[in-house]
Amino acid sequence: MRQAPATPARVTAAAPSPGLADVWAHPLLRCLLQGQSARQRLDQRHPWVLDTAVVLAVALLSLPDLLSSSRHGPFGDPTEHGHWPVPVRVAFTAALVVPLWWRRRTPAVTYGMISAVLLAQWSLGVWQQSGMAALVALYSLALHGSLRVLAWAAALTAAELVLAVGLLAPVEHPFFGLFFLMGTLTAAIAIGLTLRIRRLYLAALEDRAARLEIEQDQRVRLTTAAERTRIAREMHDIIGHNLSVMVSVADGAATLATNRGETTADALRILADTGRQAMSELRRVLDVLREDQDDERLLGPQPRIRDLDPLLTRVRAAGLPVTYRTTGDLDTLGSGVQLTVYRIVQEALTNSLRHAGPEATAGVTVTRDTATVHVKVTDSGTAAGARSGDAGHGLVGIRERAAMYGGTVTAGPPATGHGWVVDVVLHVPAGDHQP
Image (cartoon, rainbow, N blue to C red; front, side):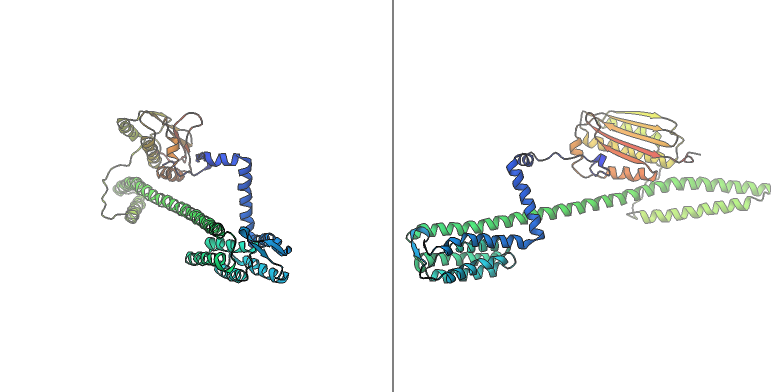
């Protein structure tokens, strides 16, 4: 019941994860994590920056093929570019690099264009570094595109590589070359799928956290509504009892005034009739508040402060030693205030029985001042961390009851030592007392 804090003073901060703390303590890892967060924020605001950077990076890696007229191809096979004009090589490079700018918006189309250009280039016996654009396209397709299209793209790329190494552009070491190319193909797809699964996992965690927060809020609202209904029922009994006394006294006074021939008899009869009408309205309100119309409650007086002694006896019999101290004239408090004090002590001790542990002890102190009633329930249990881990409803009821009298509620572990403290201050109006 102590798990839904209403004020920052009642919040129990969770201990940080040791693994995450170790990561942030390392300077290099901390810089990498901070840099990743900054890149993600920049990419969300300006996505074109990353796309342009990828295009420029692949283009720069392709410059050696454009600046040299004779370079060795991959895997030991010399490939002469001299008979291919520079504009043709630049056109091939541009056709491979430029589509990468749309790799995240249309990954399937980007891969299709790059795959077609690569097949045409290999048909002419040309190997260029710009061919790595196919790996970037496959990575983007695995990260952003359809998985069915990815499967077809992986099979098509593998077939193209086998065709290029074995027939279109033979190399000196075909098995080594094919092994290397297949490995890079698999790595690009694996990295894309890994990041995709990670994003889906994080999205699922965020969605689950949001749903849990909504469910927790709904549980608190439902508990608050149920507790208010319960309070209304109890107050109905108290008000109904007082009204019954008022009606009986008014009827008796009206009869006495009639016998004496006094003029106040009519006013007293009106007072009694008004009281009976108020009681009828209270019964209608109670019928509305009932959750189950067939639920018949046992008739009996609502508990008062004097009923705390039997309550504490039952708690002690359950195994929790309890000390009880009072200060001030509590018997003259109004019925509603006494009921509120009783319920607060009852809820707090119930929570102590559940969480304090077998060796714990509890103490209850009720103090009345001129305009306040101070209720304090403590226990020496050692399970304060467990009490702050799960949502409960007892504190909601205590808070709702205290709010009826403009009170304040403080619940949490004490400043020193173990255990739990429920501290409630109720503001009692000057005229709220027993007649």
